[in-house]
Amino acid sequence: MAERVDPRFEAELRRGVVQLVALHYLETPRYGYDLVRLLGAAGFQVEEGTLYPILRRFEKAGILASRWDTSGKRPRKYYELSDDGRSVKAAMLDAWKRARDATDGALDRPMKEEEAEAAEPAASEDTP
Amino acid sequence: MSRTERDDYLERLEELLPAREAARVRMEVDALIEDRIEEQRERDPDVDEAEAERAALRALGPAEQLADELVSSPLVIPLATRRTFVRVLAAVFACHLLLSVALTFAGATWDSIPGLLAPLPNEPFAAVFLGVITIFLIDTGALLCIFVAIGRAAPDRLRPTAPLHARATRKGALQGLVLLVLMALIVNLFLDEVFSVKHGDEFRPFLASDFKSIVPYVNLVLAFFALRHILTLLDRGETAMATAAEALGCLSGAALLVIAATLGKLVEMPTSSKLGREAAEVLDNLIERVFLVIIVIGALLLMLRFVRLAIRFGRQVRA
Image 1 (cartoon, each protein chain N blue to C red):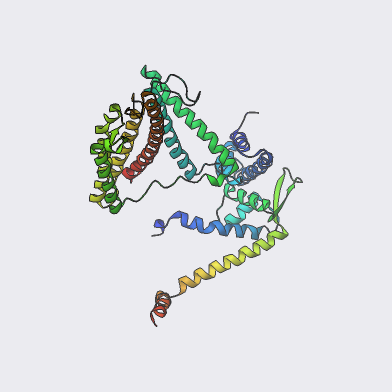
Image 2 (tube, rainbow over the protein chains, first blue to last red):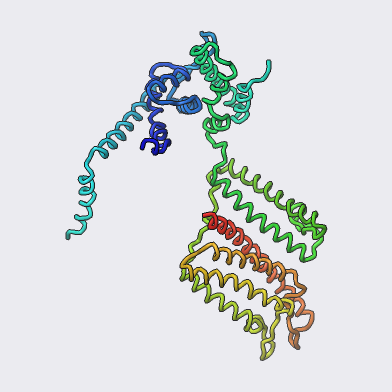
């Protein structure tokens, strides 16, 4: 049955969340491919073509700060959460928690209880 | 040093990006590619360099797609814009072609608008064909320029054209049929009475016999429109056949109007003791010009409607 699930379902589910997880990992300075590896190990298989535009967008928005490290054998660009970025990450985390709790609540509640709640406003409109 | 796929990729990416960002993005993407190649080397020291490079490029995706993600305005033309362009082009081309054909029938030998509007050559066939292609290329080029200009100045203005679908109802079909019957009565039985001028105590018709000779063909056009309404009534709504009937009506109507515009004389004002020959000719000329304006506008509107119906018919058949 699992093979009948649209593969886009999971990808779309993860698309917003991966940004939050990426910001979480960027509390510590990291370079692009390092972040790809970390996200992969956490179960978020993203490739550079997906992650790089996200990092650039965050950098343009001031959520991430960046610097080039030229001390190694070749230059590497490191990204890190900025002060503004920490506020944004906190807001995204709140939004994620709300969505998660709402989803869990809806899925855990028995169906009959939901039908009864849905019928209540109609009944109150009928009564004089 | 020979060019690698990586060099080609980075160059293509750079060309697609705005100049102020291109160099910076190239450097960053190059670093990402290098990181992935290095990681592959760490896992397998004997890895083929070219294959490792290809794997890194695959992870980035096509340069066009990456560039599209990076710029604020889309590189890929949205479907809605493309659809709008095609529909507008179809309408403009049809009208342009119609006007050129009208000029050809009218025997014009001069360009109405040099380089833009001219009669089509009517022989040999190759010249006619090239004439049609030229009209298409002019319209495509002009529209492209307009779309680019609007796209830069106000990208939100390039909305899809108005929906092709206008619901056909039985009530509308009945009303349409009544209207068509009235038109048929006027055209076939009361044409002289409607288009007449009072001379003394009597009304004398002023439509030229050339113009009245096309009445049977007007009935054909009306028949197409009537068929459309009848099909709508029978099928309880619009079908592909009804759309086709209306499209044929519009096309034949436009063609008939073009032919009418090129007839020798449309109006022959009757003379009398109160209206001399010279005054009658001036009136003829005046009324003919008014008729021609109405005919040209009518033909263009019918042609536009034909194009929309043709596109709608295609969609109904494919659905």
